[in-house]
Amino acid sequence: MVKEVGSMNYSEIKPEEMYELICQANLPQQQAYVTRDKSKLYFRHYPSDSNRILILLHGISEDSKYLFRLAEYVSSNHLAQVYTPDLRGYGTYAERKGDVDYIGQLDDDLAGLIHLIKEKNNHAKIILGGHSIGGGTVLRFSGSQYSDLIDAFLFIAPYIHPNAPTNRKNEGGNSKVSLAKLILLYLFEALRIRGFHHWNILNVTKPMDIQHGGETLNLSFRLLMSRIPQNYQQNIKKITKPSFVVIGDKDELFYSEKFDSLFSPNQNIVTKVLPNHNHDGILFSSETYKEVEKWLAEL
Image (cartoon, rainbow, N blue to C red):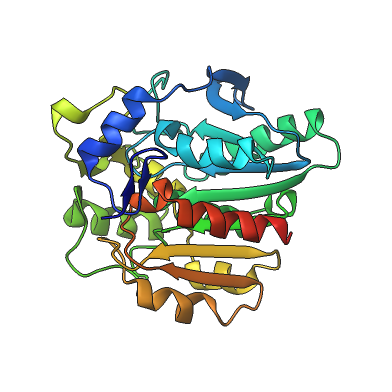
């Protein structure tokens, strides 16, 4: 593992190390915005003297806190202003942790946040990025009715879809899906029976001594389905905006060598594999920051 104590550079990181970094971080105060259904959702803003806006989406169980180091680098180097929202169902102020009202509500929420940002930043270039299943949420958004709101897409160690070839077999990390419930709910969905979408379908195990209070450890079917594209292959094919995929070759959850073949047929998407980086360490590595910086500079 590569570590530079002064700059705290990690290319591989353990959960307890990330917990310590989150606890030590000097995070911006959260700000609220009102969604179309009059709910309050929260985000952090990392200001910068830039007309580019990077919106970074968090993973399956964490809220947006752990994205702070990449956000700080991008904003302090004036590569872009950065917004890190806590998606509905996540974070300290979540009304119902682990749940949404309907499949696709996160798309509507993000569109509302983007419109708010655009009102304050005329002619800004909007980049939507995400880590882990945050990348899957980005891919979902790229194929939604709101795709024209975005000028570029950033995928960091992205979870694409349960059926994607990039997934390591039998490697769900600390996340476990109830396959019996999932199969049943897929059948119900095909029959347009939607009264059971609130069922918990995914559980995340995390030791109490490294919990910071913002985690979401149980997800409903409708929240999980709101985080991934319905047809990932079609969404990848249809991307027309500049896009960048970065993955570590020591990622515990995904086959890094399979990302290029998945994305390379679309010439708008560039894929980069970083040696000696694991799933979370890629967010705390100076090598990642330099690659993202280079890509942003070319937009």
